[in-house]
Each structure stands twice: as structure tokens, then as C-alpha cells.
Length: 185
Length: 137
Image (tube, rainbow over all chains, first blue to last red; front, side, top):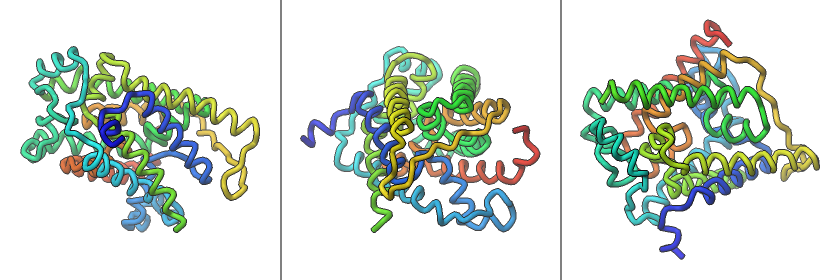
């Protein structure tokens, strides 16, 4: 069983479990949306004193922070007990495109050129992660949600705003992939 | 402990995002290059099931475990807010290869450098809160 679970899981299992997690949270009286936690963290750190947007009862969002703690634990369990150190099975075309940019073929889940500690503490690597994260935090709050809140919960509710947000996610992602990455690497 | 169920839901989420490789920068690149069905399969399956489930919940007015009706708060309609905000989000998503959920799953997976992106995301959220009244919504 453990051996079976240790292989990479096919996409449909993931889709089914994500939908299940969404239902679980609805059944618990909450809604699935991860990026709201970033606002809660700002508020819990006292940002509400200076900025009205963070002046709310963040303790009412504790449940979502606990979900986040679970997500970290889930990643830990997967890496420690359900992993055989496999290499991510991306397509040959992607490997070739990335190698043209100078990013070597995967030997685990993340590229050495960005995620290794040596790379992350070069100016380039550090800025990629910091500014990338910055855009994610800023954009998610501006758009009122991220992949979980808009692409999963919002599209499931057939909300037009969520569709517009998802189109935005793709416009941004395509700009980075096709224009920014070739300039950076 | 009332909070335990949320931790368990999170663990389930963290394991499945890891094991389906959705936390991988490479998978996000592959998606934005349209070179594999994998990520579209994950999101597509979740959305198709989600649409059915949401429809059933509304149609049969299902309740949560405490007996309260399950409600969906629709987002206020606007174009600039979702389009501009979404585009900025997408720029960062393709750069770090992780949206907010997978960002935290990556910490558990011990890709420690992702912590830099988490700090960035918190700072970005703060800046939005500070200047939101000056942005088009």
C-alpha cells in the first residue's frame, strides 16, 4: 500500500481530492481559499494598527490558519513517508525549452537554478523568489482570491468575476513564461 | 479539539498537491507552455466535480455539520479588479511556480528557499492593503 502511494499520483486523483477538500470545508461551514491567510497573517502581526484593511477580527480566521498548518504537515508527510525521491515527470518538450533557457532537467520537484540554497542566495535567485512572491500576495488580494478561491471555489459556483480572474492568472503566467523568463535567464 | 478537522483537511490537501506534483515549478512551466494535460486535468477535474457539488448543495439546500445552510457569497462584479489583480498574480505564479497553497506545502517538503517567496507574498499583501483605495477596482 505504502509503495503504491509512494508513486506519483495521476491528475484525476488530485482533482477528486481537491474537490473533496472543498466540500469538506463547505460542510464545516467555511469556504476554500488559501490566500486569505496572508491577510490574516498581516493582521495577526499587528498591521491593523496602521492599515484599516487589516483591522478585523483575525481570530475568526484561525480555522484557515490551521488548514495552512495542515498543508505544511501534508507536504512534510509526503516528502518523508510517501516519497521515493522521484523526478517530476514533465514532458520532453518542456525539458528542451527550459534547457534552452539554461535550466537543467529536473532531478526532483524543483529546479536547482532557483530553489537550491546556493541559487536562492544569489541576487538573481533571491529577487526571483521575493518579487514572485510579492506579485502573488499583491495580486491575490487585489483580485480577491487565488487559485483555490477563484479557479476552484469561484468557477465551481459559475461566478463571472472568478473567470475574469483566472483569465488574468493566465495572461500574467504567459507573460512571465514567454517574455520575462527568457530575459531573466 | 474543534480545530483538528481543519488540520486534517489541510494535511489531505498538502499530500495530494505533493503527490500529484502540483507543487513543482516544472509542472507550472509545462502548463504555461501548454505541453501537458497534467495541470489542466487536475484543475479541470476539481472544477467539474465542484460545479456538480455546488449545484447539488444549492438545489437541495444542504446544511453544514452544525445545521446552518451552506451559502455562497458571490463576488462583486468588476473587470479591472479581477483582470489586473489576476494578471499580477499570474506573473508571480509562473515565476515562483507556486500559488499560495503549494507555497506552504513546499515548506513542509523542505524546499526552504520558498520561505523567501512567502515573505514576499506577505509583504505584497501588506502593500495592497496600504494602497488599495488608490487602485482601480
